[in-house]
Image (cartoon, rainbow, N blue to C red; front, side, top):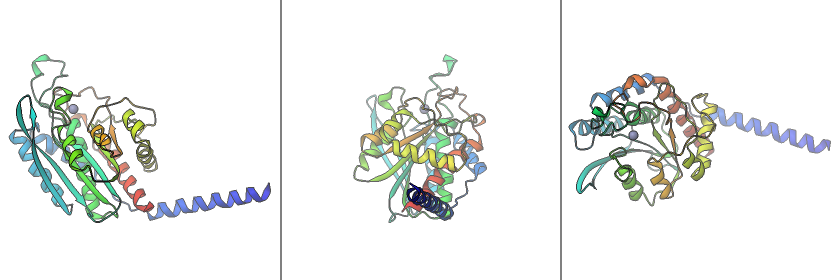
Length: 303
Ligand SMILES: [Zn+2]
């Protein structure tokens, strides 16, 4: 029995040594929490990013400008979707880093905000648009800062950042997730190795649990991100199962993209006029940003 134990011990120490070597090779990409928070505030300052409004158009230009300063390729893809018999003009924004790299990863969020505060406790507010600090701006703010980190230390992989429009148009589900449906259709031939959607990741009391559809359809991606988050010391990530949430990732999953959503659905200001920047924190954005950057670096060390 002894030789076997010796061999096992030797193998174990070899594995530990490999893990340490891999950790040492990881590219460190810093995440500026305060700058990410300022980007969240900036998006809200344009006003509600409701498709068809001036605020929406100005924010699209600003987002494209931020991404053009970082990525090799930036495209604004405009299209219309019929909503209640009328064409609704929408724009997805796509940025690509290292277009010749492999594998191809996808990071995404929705950049529009909801035209109706239909969950507001005061019915007089139901027809008003929301600021969408958490529901919209938070995921985008994290991705803008990730984009800057990728600019400073370019990735080995090809990485696409996609900002979807029309996620929250509604009010019914049939008129939501409009941009991601079009994106999924346009990128049918793209073999994304893994993909992560961010939505409502700015809550100052952030707790992210594995979302059920993600866990069922893309368990390896959930494991990859949670393991990276734990190794990066991101305490907001909890292993206890969360609820199933209908979101943009479902349309990517339907087209064969292993996409998970990071979302904290326990947010009392969801779809109310109180979804404002004061409910969000720089630290929460950083928890998610650092987990993503760690997952990218670990993936990089594997290839
Ligand atoms: Zn929403």
